[in-house]
Amino acid sequence: MQTPRIELVRLGQVAPEDIVALHNDPRVLKHMPLAIGHFGLAECARWVEDKERQWRENGFGPWAILVDGAFAGWGGFQREAGDADLALVLFPAHWGAGRMICRRMLELGFGQLGLTEVTALLPPSRTRLGALARFGFQPAGERIIDGQRFMRFTLARP
Image (cartoon, rainbow, N blue to C red):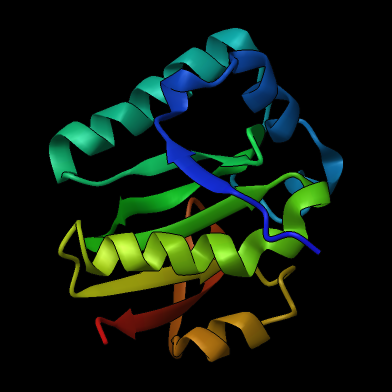
């Protein structure tokens, strides 16, 4: 089996319709408790601009993820309560590539971006946590965001 080619590009480089489709997939929304309301092209444009602003303000932000040239989802680092929080949102067809994508993002985060620690916030619907442990993430309590509970994990630069 051939290893998939993973590319991380800016969100503005992918078709907004692809992002809208991802943000409206019920299997994805099950794990995104903060994603409420309609998400169409206008909401997508504001969302992409917010993610680009994070790059300007923080020197890091989320990328669009391409697997073998196809949009698979988005992920990267977002400022959350002072932390560089790792996010990863993929179409279900690409869930199996999550470990490779996460490894790539962490290498860039700790290397090129110079991060010293990252967090991961997961909703309670995410019950499979083995991948986080394999990367070395440690449980670090909880965080409440907009009334929603998230499990918090931290990982220091190796």
